[in-house]
View 1 (cartoon, protein in one colour):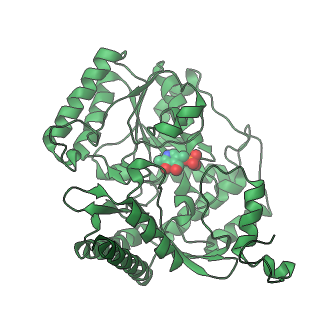
View 2 (spheres, protein in one colour; view 1 turned 135 degrees about the horizontal axis):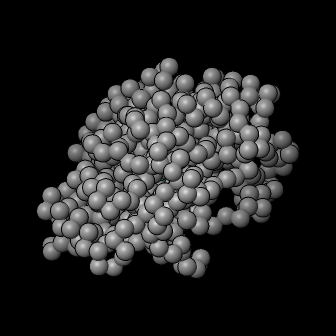
Length: 461
Ligand SMILES: Cc1ncc(COP(=O)(O)O)c(C=O)c1O
């Protein structure tokens, strides 16, 4: 498949297949792809590193798609996958098997009381669908409250409660009826527009009261559920204030609604604790776990109490798929949790996460274009700005920084197409990251920031 770099070089087929360009060109011909594609074509992964077909190594600070926990191809993970693949891959959804039962029991053990029963699926979107159906069946109501900036997936229901506007909504017609949008303190209108309105207790309080008034004046006032993403990761690592989360819990209790926390990104250890809600002093009624649950294989869970599960089932709850509780996925998910426990990876997230954050803050202090460092554990955001005081986004600089870091072997999460996240570099490494790897990554990022900062200064002169 000749292109600019390979054309005229008379490469054999074997040699062609060792170039990123060859696969990139073929990919363009055969994949339905609506977004940009990075120029690397992956061959293999080991630990925190990914290697492209040309043999170049990159530090993967995206953890695949924020899924890989124990590092790429951890020997115990791979061994569990191979062992189960040779034994039993799939059964019908009307059956159970030891791998499924063991995983369900394990989920009950790593969640606090009263969480006990789970529905297993493959993706976060599906687990959110199940969560909303559980809440609807349990309460006998249909309205679901969500918030701008929440990301819950791309299936009908999960997309309907995803608070991303513009081209995320435009071509797909009406969303699920009954979705209620309430404001968060991030976007609450305040005179003078302070840089971080969510950090002002008066703004948080006013926003809570406005939410309650909207519920009473514009809805039944008794929704089935509230959807929360504690740290709005895809919307730029925005952290909901604790007081706001606690007020939502109170509203649920007062109105008989269920609180669904989508912990696809914040759960399973990424914040330095099994669950993100442990940092907020409240528990949800339903937890959605995905991504890091399978550590790479498609596995998700909707976890709730026996009471809610049993009553919802008695009132007609239904959710199924050809792939609920597949033995292969359950065995690998179980092995993944086993590695996290045995290797004390959540402690590592806390320790190396603290070190990473301190290094990034040092970098920010020394740079005119790095704004604040935010997030927790291994879900961190680095803000790239024009002006540290106003926080004005610097899109030109972030494009150049992430491209240079990539060139020098560091993959970061950057989502240019969504305006809230367009000036945030997300760092979400696997839980096995060492201090030395963290230092290597910060070194690459720091060099890229300095390089781009110098270019900007020259242009301004
Ligand atoms: C918080 C959150 N919820 C749900 C989803 C959807 O998960 P999936 O892409 O597996 O359907 C994502 C995916 O990025 C997510 O970040």
